[in-house]
Image 1 (spheres, each protein chain N blue to C red):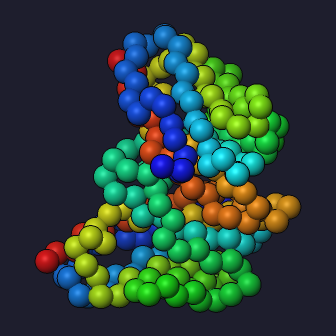
Image 2 (spheres, helix red, strand yellow):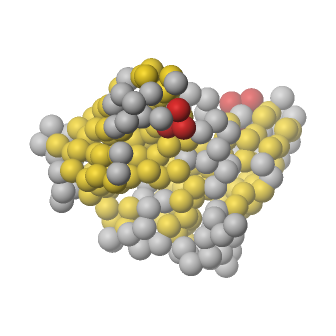
Image 3 (cartoon, chains in turn orange, yellow):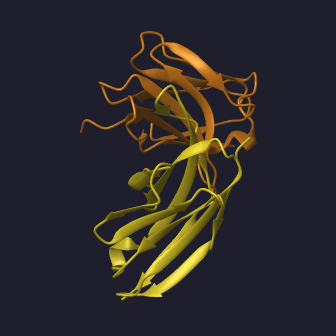
Length: 112
Length: 115
């Protein structure tokens, strides 16, 4: 499968714990995006990388959230001191040039 | 920022009928409008997209129309089949440096096609 892959698929954690998710984009794509989707809603933009540079962050991304793409390939999204409101599906997408965004299957986070 | 409204939130049709989903957007800078289909527990998948320099685009049973003056765009599915049942999302994006990013999504339409 040469699509966007995300790991893990599911994560259950206790409130206050830190979690980290990984995204591997389509190999030739230089742009990588993180979105969050809650039940019954469309995906919401969180942040965007072009190569290794993080070019934009949404106001939804509080100080507890940090994303990296150190070598311009895979990316990680870390949430520190998780809260119940962080429970959601975290979607990664990638693109290149004028190509559409291709999404991964997401990581479903449940904070208990 | 951009705001995308999508209607209806649910739509039930008989197999073979047509389905229409409508979206409006607020930011006149938006010029790229994709539609995604999301089946339960799966990734959003692009089904069709349109850029602001055209008013209509068609791909087999799926078509999208865009009215930039009125800031609305619509998805049309003809000859619906049970496998078309899913949640459909519209989205809008500005174009920056020739690329599309920062999609703003509608809240989705749950389409059910009854056999």
